[in-house]
Length: 376
Ligand SMILES: C[S@@+](CC[C@H](N)C(=O)[O-])C[C@H]1O[C@@H](n2cnc3c(N)ncnc32)[C@H](O)[C@@H]1O
Ligand code: SF4
Image 1 (cartoon, rainbow, N blue to C red):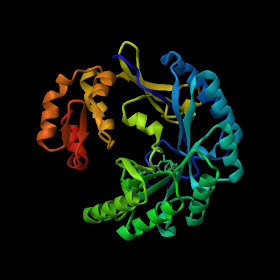
Image 2 (tube, helix red, strand yellow):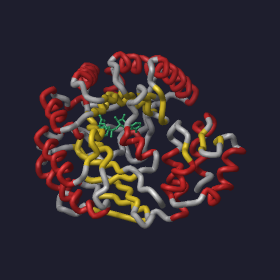
Image 3 (cartoon, helix red, strand yellow):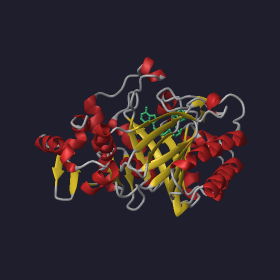
């Protein structure tokens, strides 16, 4: 393996005011006060124990996700990012994203985050409809969603993302479109537009709400996609739209099979070693165990037989073409090892091949699971 891929840093904040019924992220309802400084101490100790993995490699991007990172106080955020900067070489102008829940947004704290070095905020709006927000068990209403998005855009950060979900219980295409109209009117540089999925170990998983049927979902997607595209947002991943130049660099690195350190409860990391081994690590999920100093939960090496699937699983979510050279550099495998699967994918109309690239076709995006299954 000649080049090591770019390296990101993911930091997980595991608490939320209350658990949303559709959510299977590692988030825990906060009882009492968040242990701001204590948790930051653990994050930095966790980072210290990881630093031997990366031999002084530069950090290209930082993403603080959750849970609800916007519950962390501004001084704690400052100490966290200062601690990161003193421990690792952070690239000049690195994208540093924070996820925020509109129910936890205060102007002063957000200015504090900005002074700490946050230059991109991702606001979990989900919907602007009061009824839909209530159905989703959100802690905020329409006004707070609007105010949070306005506050984030007014800070003059490098970029703001709004998360919007569609395919909500009883949602019509017109209602979904209305959410997008309101989001676009706020003029964010980036919009993540997720279709609601029902995850098994959630409240919706046990008591599924009435969801739109497949035809309605398809109509919603087509109308929404057209609206976003006409408004100047380019789709670059299945659920991600951005104005030109404002793609999320941190997520792009995941999808391109880049490397990342993960610190905090349940955080995942993927690190390519200089000898070509690829190591996956995950941290203790529950705050109780994690805050006893037991950071590392599991680690394993990605077997060469799993690498093609893992590479394409991420890569084929992107609309951009995949350079064949990336496959070789990032997996250490030869093209001939996947020749049969690539030929089959072309026969099925999922993939187009040139001398330098593979490009997923529209049909391939539509049948992504069948395309990926070829590499299992
Ligand atoms: C980890 S959450 C972070 C944001 C913050 N915790 C919040 O909810 O406001 C990231 C985003 O994933 C999306 N999401 C979470 N669960 C989902 C599900 N079951 N289906 C589709 N999208 C989901 C939501 O849009 C959410 O804003
Ligand atoms: S606020 Fe976000 S992370 Fe927390 S439970 Fe809701 S969707 Fe999940």
